[in-house]
Image (cartoon, rainbow, N blue to C red; front, side, top):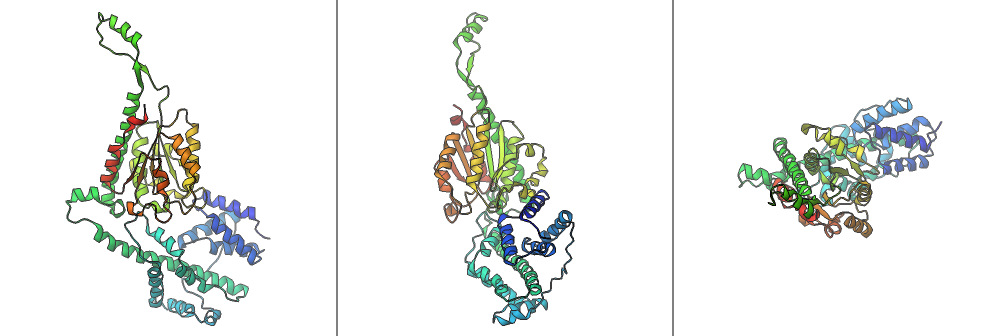
Length: 455
């Protein structure tokens, strides 16, 4: 008995519905490996699936449970952290045999030297960028030095049993390697945090100027409460301008008729209604990995807005768009971060940023509204994972929205570097502002002028 491609894809959908997302590229690797090894045994295929897909111990346990539920098959594996030292490792003349032998003896000196070498070879890491340690880990994993390290487990002439043993070793080593990289990144980030905070400022002033990325839990709680209030303020500001814009030109006949009741004195001016349908305001927030902690402040701003008025729509996106308006309306203030806890449910493809696909869906959603949306607010860094953003999309966005206001939590000096394509959106934006602390966020809200968009 062998697993078919459809069975694996159906299992992948089952996993997604149970809060475990399997990226398409990982499934592709599994299918290629299945073909390469000519796997036609049900148990062995599940075993390889179990070792190839998870990236952490926690994910492995979760996947093991899902395999048992879906396929009614229990994977029995020795979960010991020790490595099997295969004779083939000593044949290649590399350090792998010595490294894993020392790891079995809980001697991590050579391993730590290896990890530090990988990070140093990667180059300087600027922790003032609005990205998480996991983001830097993913960048390091793409480096040649990291790839060469993992290739130590390849190109051996193994028999079938040793091949599985090597795969187990490789996955354990990969997890340990990633954990050590994250540990070093965390230490370096803490050093950067100490040197970044402006000690010469007063505590209250310092908090309003403190980068959201460097806030501790207590500071974050205070700033999130203020961000929620700014969301309320922005919503009220939009609603006030809608009310003003709903008044058109003087209705002369009704005004004269009304004045006759007061002896010809114009005590009340009657205006013609201008807007037959009230326009909507749309606000969208990038919650991809590169947005790190800023997504939480973005979601809080969304919550503060949609909790006030129905004419405000809220969306989040990674590689596709999701309407979270109703979700936010049902939440309490202390439950806002639950949106980000369900990150996998907002993944539409491979889990990497895709502004092209997300904004095309936004345009399609906007066309479904009863009235044309006048204003769009975007919270995002414009980093598109080196995917293309077409001129057609930019033109369509420009045609759909009269005014676009953009908040970018990344330092300006990093805009349009690497995979950042913020310059393409800057052309059609009314304002593109760096917003990475409370002062900048407050200034952004205060400077928005909806009057220009509701004429």
